[in-house]
Structure formats: C-alpha cells, structure tokens
Image 1 (cartoon, rainbow, N blue to C red):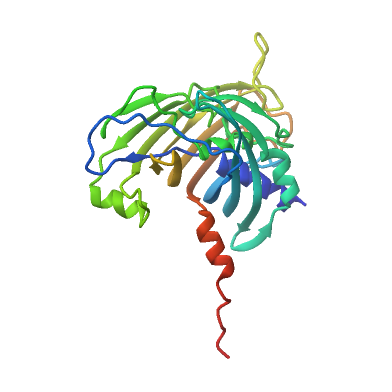
Image 2: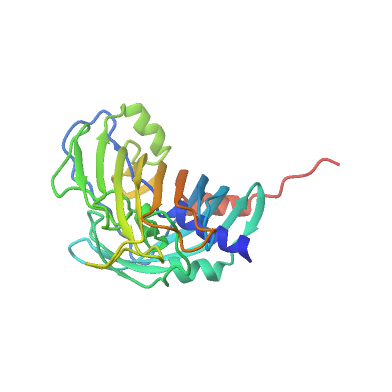
Length: 322
C-alpha cells in the first residue's frame, strides 16, 4: 500500500514540474502570428514519459527517500466548445498510466489517476488558461512547491504565444499555470531559427511539409516559504515552525506545427533543490532539523497520430524464434 502511494507521489513530481515548447521556422524569417487551433470533438492524444531520479520525503516519512522511476501517461485533450475568438473548452482525460520503480513494473489504477487528472479547461488560442474545472485534490502532500497534478494540462499546450507576430530568434515572457502563482515563477520562450531542410524532415511527407517550428522554453522559480507544523504556509501574523527555501528550474524544446496549431513533440529537463529548516526544537526525536530534497526529471512528450495508431494495431504480431 505504501509503495502504491509512493508511485502516486512520483506521478505528481514528474508531471507537474515540466518545461515548455520550442518552435522553429525553416528558412522563412518573416513575422508569424502563432496560435493553437482546435477541431471540435477531435481528440489529441499524447504520450508523456518521465524518467525521474530524486530524494525527497514522501507521505509521513520525515527523512528523504531515494527514488528512481519511469512514469508513462497517455493523456487526451478533446476540444468541445470552440468560440469565434479561437478559445475553446478542452476536456482532458487520462487514457492509461503506468510506472516502473527500480525497473519493476507497477500498474497504476486508471480510476485513481482519472480522479485527479481528468479536467475541463478553457484555453485562449494563445494558450492562456482562463478557467479550470474538475480534478480531485491530491490526498497527500509533497515537499516540492508548485507541484500539482491538476496542472498537467499545461504540458500539452505549454507555450503562451504573444498577440503580435514573432520572427525566428525572438524571445518573449509569459505567465504559465505550470508551477502555480506562489513564488512568482518566470517563463520565457524563443522561436528558434531552423534550416528549411530540417523543418521539412520534422513535417515528414505531409503536403504541408515545412510547417514544423521549434521553440525553446526556460523557466525558474525561487522558493522562500514559512510553514506551520503541517508544512502549510503560515497565515498572516502566525508563528512559523519551519522555513522552506530553494529553486526549481527547467528548459526544453518542442516542435510546434504552425498549420495544425498543435505541439507534436517535446523534451524537457527539470530540477528542484529544496531545503527545509526547523526554526526551533523538533517536536519528536524522529523529526530532523534539516531536510534536503532533490529531484531531476527528463520528460518527453509525443503526439500519437491516429494513422500511426491504426497501423500499429493492424500490424501482425512478430514471430518468436523456436
């Protein structure tokens, strides 16, 4: 039972601390107005894989626990209502969730993942989030600020585009829901210049080859909190029991298809270094005065094209040698 709870905690660490996309536009250096595009009732399905190494307290453990895991999540986003201004109400749903702890497979009950991660989000065509509905709260806490599985949707539409055209090499700042608002996280994205040949290769044999762009995203958040005995932020005027300080940062690159208006792939590296210090004497002999938490995650995001899925399903099983 405890191992299952650890897996849940790992999912949170990996799928809510992620960086965002990158765009590139072949040899074309003209200004481009970038935006997401929605097709009503046509789901976009993504495979998210996180390789995680870390050391942090989980559940009621006072000391950090070494963790090594691979988490795989298939997550779909289905636009339901699309408005004239380009915004949409998007339904996010978990299709499957699996984990490996120390190379040992550990299936995750689908219903449990869906309770927390299934949501309906209203998103502007720029990627700005306007409203979020659904998703049960996490039944346990972690020592990494900004980590919340209910914000997993930001990984599929991670960049918030500016309202004005951008050229290759341009960088802009934006607000993201990825790490929440506490700690004033900083996000920026850059449209990367890429040769026409490289852009054509990313688009493959599609008739709109050359429409694949690359984006680089960077983010960081300083952590400086005063907490009570339950590790919750103290209310105004209340006495702090411990402090929590550190930094979360990450960077990644994504491929964005400007014609289709979707992210097709991405890779993100995220790190978190957090230190908690008691301000007085511990309440129990087991409670440490200092706790150091470290997490490193490499996350890949891949669009699962319907055509590729059908080909894989129809392919005959491979023969095993006798």
